[in-house]
Amino acid sequence: MNNQSSNSPADKSLLAAIDLGSNSFRLEIGRLDSGHIERVEYIKEAVRQGGDLDEERNLTTDAIERGIRCLSRFGERLQGFDASHVRAVATQTLREANNRDHFLKLAKKALGFEVEVISGVEEARLIYQGVSRFLPQSDEKRLVIDIGGRSTEFILGHGFESTQTASLHVGSVAWALKHFSNGEFTEKAFTRAEISAESIFETLGNHFNNKHWDVAYGASGTVGAVADVLAQYGKPADSVSRESLYWLKEELLKARYVDKLRLNGLKEDRKPVIAGGLSVLIAVFEFLNIDNLNVAKGALRHGLLHDMLARENDILDLRNTSIQRLARKFDVDETHANTVAEVAEKLFEKISDGTTFADGEYFKHARKLRWAAQLHEIGGIISPVDAHLHGAYILDHTEPVGFSQSELHCLSLIILGHRGKLKRLEADFSDRIFMMQLICMRLSVILCHARQMPNLRGIQLTLNHNGFKVTLPKSWATKYPQSHYLLDEETLAWQKINWHFELVTTI
Image (cartoon, rainbow, N blue to C red; front, side, top):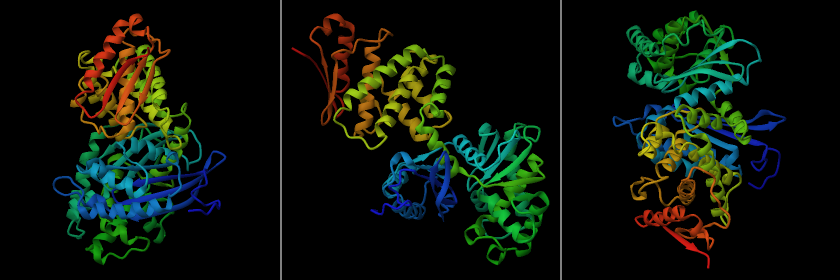
């Protein structure tokens, strides 16, 4: 697009958030104006992938094709956007799908940007971020509930900060398939659906009961759909009461079948899942003893937009805090870890000379390397000998605030590969940037073996087509014999894969 109008994607004040939900895919484009984000465009498509996981937990071919067609349309709209101004996240359906990697590769090609799969905890945090931006600032303690297609998020918060989060495998699409699959609405089906949902909510314990909050809000999805219908029948706008939910349930029971359901304000794409969503919402009211739920305007996609602003400011990036918290939790020697991180970043700067990065990409890759270095000994609390194995496992099975699952897996691979045999590393060795990060990580650990800042003066690290070369000053080997020995040993580790490592000394 060559149009340079204020609405053109070339406008650097534009941000875009894509939410790949279980029921719908949504694209929100906003313009940053004096610290505020104003909506420019909103597109929603009912893709309903959540109903198309087969018995082996794989997305069906039809579900994949529907999703890719939608993302292709979104991608056309986002042509010209900087990668740092676009975030696309997938939630419960992609968390469950065993063939998600296949879909994610196709999604990146169709959309033109990476799609991240986020954890339920991260989804809840982002939902609260979105909701809180549309609420007046007050001292009230808030409960936010978001019933999606295959998961329901519960969040307690105050101001802009969430204080407690939970994500449970209960949702409108999942419950519609499980309890109303034949399209029939019966009292028995509703009772079973509500009891089933409440039994899962019991895992929350007392953490979200009404002594912890002053006002309850319902975000997006099911709550919004229910509120739209109720408003058409004279119920108070922007709120849902317990009484109105049971009125709506009676209307569904009167209709008996989904194809006979006629409700003002109910969109066609919501009809197949309305009974599932309503039964879950009733269960929420009963379990938490809620009398009235306010309809929130913000949602996950709005939280993504505001999170992008925070990520542009390294000081405000919550992922830095998460890394520090993990390091303290697992008793990492932070002084040594930060030394390794500093050396790794300096080496990455050397090796990146001559490599062209897209806007913001160099910083993004260098930051991941720094985080991995800061946590490279995280597994040492379990076993110093196999710290790299345990560290990788921890990163793959934890949910630190701000991270997507793909980001955490990248960190875990760098940590896993920071020492030992490379041929056993199940990684994509064709990923040039990852290999650059990996060599920098391995070399920084070697150079910092004495647990102090090494002398890097005169050391060069260069990249060629499929290998790396370290050039050392003439007298370096004599001054640092142990470091030289370890570097020489490193050449052996690279002989069993399709990358080579060369160690030379200047004459």
